[in-house]
Image (cartoon, rainbow, N blue to C red; front, side, top):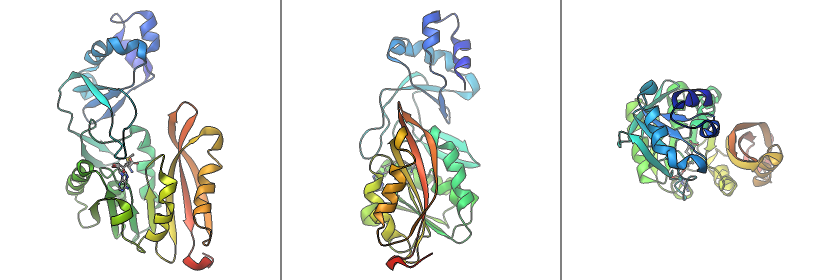
Length: 281
Ligand SMILES: C[S@@+](CC[C@H](N)C(=O)[O-])C[C@H]1O[C@@H](n2cnc3c(N)ncnc32)[C@H](O)[C@@H]1O
């Protein structure tokens, strides 16, 4: 939804100055609308929420109080209007996601990436999703591509429970294997044709693990990183290359997933890692 839309529905309820401060849009996760408001509009959050109720199926409005918290990336949201029940069913790319956006992370900004990955997976591949969340990447891959297995590793029991539910809802139980625990401990070794490292801030620390999860014959990595915009084409690709000094690494692409914060972008590096022992691809 565009900022123009928010302004239109709030005209007459906010001053001209306040209307000009409205965000450029809001996000929808199932029936929940999620808004980021500037501090000047914080006092008006309930009025803004009320105005959104009922529009295009919005039944609950929540505003962000801060960024994701902790290792489990818990959102910090406050419900300001509508149904206090925030467990929802989100439809996207022909997949269903049950989740509670107040308890688990689901980034609307990663929409394109969730739709892109299945197009890269070749029939019969084994995929390991090291930070699976509620199945944001594992579910579309299992539904829209033809992998033989997707191991979906998740540390947070709440996200893991939604992941298991989403496996059932999308009827991909024959393909997706949800694993509860720290990927350092529970991710299978030496099995993967493709490894997804879908987390930010700490991703580079898990590159050695991704190398052990790949087959000895090598495979593909999708490495996510939040990085100052000026370094987006250098640091993430360099980190991937440096993690495998004894293996051939081909950088296939660096793509911006979304703006992360002022001056910082979220990028994903697609890379191909060669066989162990330094043999060529
Ligand atoms: C930011 S969410 C991303 C989910 C999904 N990959 C995406 O990009 O939309 C990261 C998830 O990784 C989980 N996580 C963090 N550290 C982990 C670890 N060491 N092993 C397994 N899961 C982990 C968190 O609980 C969280 O659900």
